[in-house]
Length: 260
Length: 270
Image 1 (tube, rainbow over the protein chains, first blue to last red):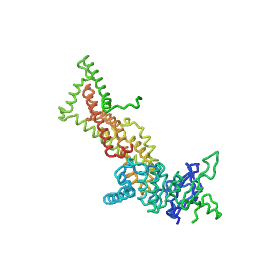
Image 2: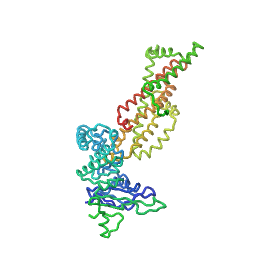
Image 3: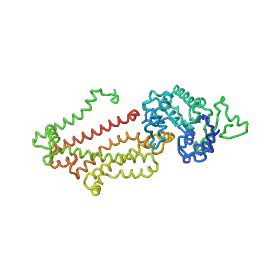
Image 4: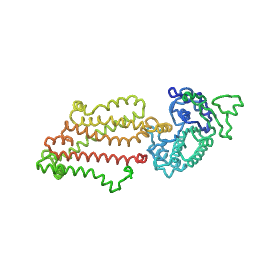
């Protein structure tokens, strides 16, 4: 079943096109890795999915409904940095996932105690219980990202967006984080979009790996054209690209769709 | 070894910190002794012993006319005016700073206005305040508040804008409303900046207080200094100046300690 449908997205900043003719259809529970050269619009695409920005043309629907114009609880996000709140302890960062939706952004009394108990259980599970009272600045990069992911998941979003979440981590920590993310995903079955520069990571974690690139290129004006999805690899079954299957159907398309 | 790599030891640090104070004290004592040797009745640079005696007299002996000790009355009067002015300015600065920093509509409406308003020289409008609010305490509190509010608004709105956009977005994905972002995300992170900004604006606040007291008042530290100037009572003036300096320093130090105690995370971030 299709959860996210992207139809004919164009996005330009002023006269500079970033994305053009982006079409994509994503089923519920899929893990989409997004790769591409720097500046080819991967993060722009993620911001569009988050509804932090509106596309110049085209439409994104989630569950058949167009996006409303601002971020909300249905889509969680983890950035490479600044994802957790520095003024809250590790425990309260998890509690914030429940508290921020209240009018004053926090819980009081019994509700607060209950949320704290749940947060303790979460921290126990992700191995951060021993630093529950610390502030994020005292944590290593890997621990901060683990906290950021747990915080985003505590709001139980249907879609999780990850913008190079492990980009600043060392290889060992990154491998641990892959295991952590895979486990969480197996539990929640949520839909994930992950932007990454690491191809190995993209294929290891993703069900599909989509590549953003420019199909048209003017050597005298490199910024004249935007990027689109040029490849859509199936990373599940030995990496047979969808293109192969679609070519057999005689279905030429710069942004190929998976066969249902 | 390069000078940028040389660090004083603990004892050296104390000695270096004390050195300028000692030098200024010695220079004063020297100059005072020289003048008094020339003319024992000189009033411009009273001897350190005279200063100490005057300070003791001011702090302990009640005024013959009123029966109360003017020194402490002046202190309470000045401090309450200062506190009221700085408190009002801090509250306005915090609210407007948050609103301008977080809400684009408010920013579009007020950013330019605050920029222009902060260029009005506060002392130039002191006569207007005296005319409209009278020569009582209200005008002095208003002068302090008007004098430092624009700086606080500009500083705090800039600090709010500097909050990483990622945090604001993240809060929204956790369901936060505008009010929740302001109260639970921006406000706690701006409070240490508020204290830092208040520390910086204490200097101007004292300036405005003393200027207002000098022009029209019947008590206060600034009033007393300008009053005894007519009698060339340098011993009283110097005592008051030293006392004002000590008060200002203690307030500054107290705010720094308060910030470190209330916001340990701000220290950890470096």
